[in-house]
Image 1 (cartoon, rainbow, N blue to C red):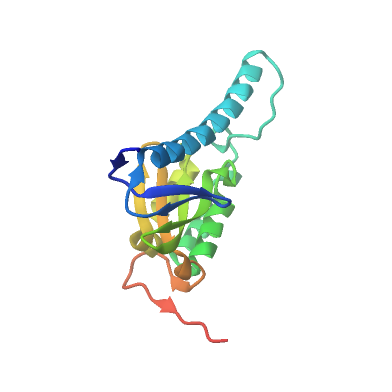
Image 2: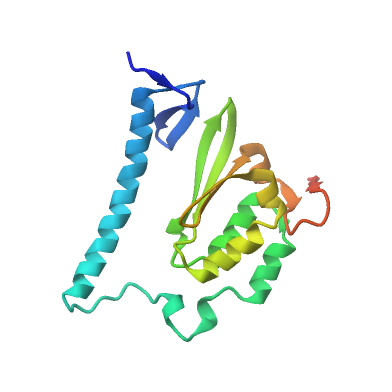
Length: 189
């Protein structure tokens, strides 16, 4: 029998991993950590292939890092940032507004359905990959009700996670910059 650790149980389903129960067994925790590590290895192998090709002198086209160009068109505009500051809509729409500005692509923003403490949630994970434009976006996000209501963790490397109850993910809110208490909007059919 596996020794229990002081975490929640994680079980694999067709939709990914979900939390269930009160404790992780050593094996379910290890399965979850293995899954996370495997995803990271895939990403690192992809980056390593590009770096090896570039080092060998091969022509590599994977997109342009906006931080290495003189063109500021890829950086979030003040209008886009203001849209987040004054955002009214659903958490799903808020994440989509962020995704529309994110560089290099939306692989660095993930929405994963999970169950914790018997409640269904959407786990939103965002990684800035060190790009100053993404850091600027997160600077605005951390001043919003979205961050206040659902922030879970921030880790070195610009990785932040949010946990939004599924029944609130498509509810309309004033999610912009903190100016007063958050106000859910009740839609009538």
